[in-house]
Amino acid sequence: MRSEAVAQRIAEAVTLGLLREGEQLPSEVDLAAQLGVSTVTLREGLSQLRQRGLIETRRGRHGGNFVCGRGTLDRTSLQSRLRTTSAAELR
Image (cartoon, rainbow, N blue to C red):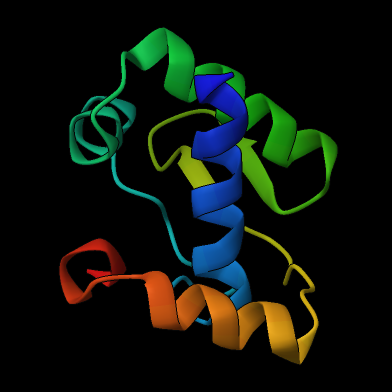
């Protein structure tokens, strides 16, 4: 399912340190465009990340989606993922 792939990509970015704890994610519209999915699919993926405790959603004037934890992947998985990820994907 595409929402699971979205959740996995964002979780990997957190695990790799590309997104740091406390960092605000781009707007849902911008993030959906960056990942090439609809906003509905993105929201489903973000919901999975909230359930796993990797992000939190804050409401209000300074609201948005924020990284609130570090995911965990073993070293071998991280190295494998880095080898297969292009520089454009990392950005």
